[in-house]
Image (cartoon, rainbow, N blue to C red):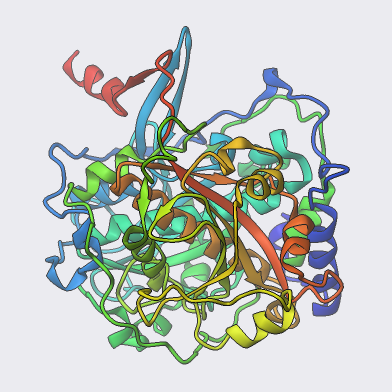
Length: 566
């Protein structure tokens, strides 16, 4: 496969391709990025990938809600670590990437999952690599969320232990075609966002079991592809390739992964890849679409430019923050809140102007939980310094004046922003804002029309309590490492998942917005387009969701439970 070839293009050429891709796929007021002329519904990609010819292992489903509450996820020291077993793997996968419900309208039915996806298209596929797990033999498995089963793709021909004790690996890949079918050339962006949401979902699910997770940042994409079997050309339809995203180490008996950094670096990814090459593989990927009417070569070219070689694990000076703000946090079982997460389609504006839906203390908590803290999900899954910051359109937050705000997620970035943004901004910090939260009002006023206009004229960006634009430190991060482009989107997706769950915890609903006018956001705050110091990567909004009573909601795994009673 072209995406796993070992010949990388030069860093200079790769960087140019990545920067050109990002520029070409921007939406503008005068035109949108290129996409299909119309949706080819007959060839809509199937929602679930399966591998024919694999041995299937049924996983147990959760019978009762978790004893761990949502608020306890941010207090990992109080959660007892559970053993590595098939029962706990079942819970882990169900709460991270499993189904959360089915929706039905007339004769049409579709699944919702715990991890959100652009257009509910779910390009992200997941695999686990197990060793010494009670109830699961050693090997490489593909997870099928619809059936809650593991498909055994590979049996290793070795008895040698390759992983740290009480651990397993989880790999993620993307099928770009699933998103390109609807979104065209912008699909590569959305696949990376979805991977970020999936990573955060994985980290939260691990936390319900007292487990920890860490992205193996040093691993090469070639090794990840080999371990997951993505380089096996004959196993896939050529236009429906899976591209390697990342590999995570899941530790089941440690609440502090950073207390033993050698544990991370000790994972022999190269050796595991070599073992996979000589393993016994089985399975043929199903065909997702019989025809592919639109071809977007820019996506494959950009994926190649973003291929990551093996690198050293990154180190950086970690900021020390006080304990997370936990007031007003939900005491619902974590599993209940995770499974009830939905993407709002529209917001109810009746009465919210009279009584704000969000208080400033709720907002402070949301922002606080996006900061990087060791052992606090989900951002502790990263090994790189945070690079994304939040532009906030505050419409109705009790205790804060409406306007445009900026929240900085690292301490030293303020001067760079002040030099890059409009010079007449206020930079006024709310009086009672916690000291460690770098929240600043840039300008006061009604920001609803600006939020709607910049989010492709979508009213959902203006009808809620507040909306966000995620600004990434951009070109300087990519100069020597073009693959960091993907990591920027992963981080945006992780932040989005925090906002999703926090919205649910206060009785509201969020939704990610992938359609926005990139340069329009930059022009609003004064970013010089020629410098590419910062770029807007993702929008998000929170409000009171309108419920469509025409839709019927069905339990996620009733179809399996019914079959068990036959």
